[in-house]
Length: 205
Image (cartoon, rainbow, N blue to C red):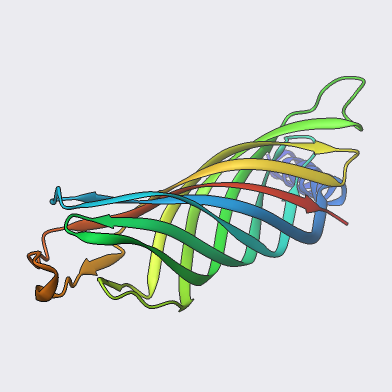
């Protein structure tokens, strides 16, 4: 029995070692565009429309080829913009700069014959964005925004990754602090969440 247990342990160790040896680790620059829109609940006086921002940074990936499963993490500078409409007040553009850190579970599909040329993948996971700068006359924004990402992508020639994802805002990211002179009522009950699309390209070494 001890010999059987020892043999199983050796087999598991060899399997883990083999997977680790074959696992692919990559790191490289990543750039992209985001389109975000604030969503308000609890008030009919506020609305927002889409605006395009930018994101740039570095990403790292770890994939086990035999399984196709892995994970990636990125550290990105992100500039977000939106256009806010307030009833009775002229609309205005709001923006902010963030340090964004998405952490994803990823599954990469292995296609027979063309796997070295094209490999589709899907990903999902949490996202945290820490505000670096950006002030607003009508909103007191939180320092940290939490979100959840879901997306798809494709890897070309084992280096170029092009992906598109959607982020759902999880926390209330701001409090409304409307000036009384604007003729609008202040309300802490108004919930502000940020949902956005992101399209990126990364080159993995």
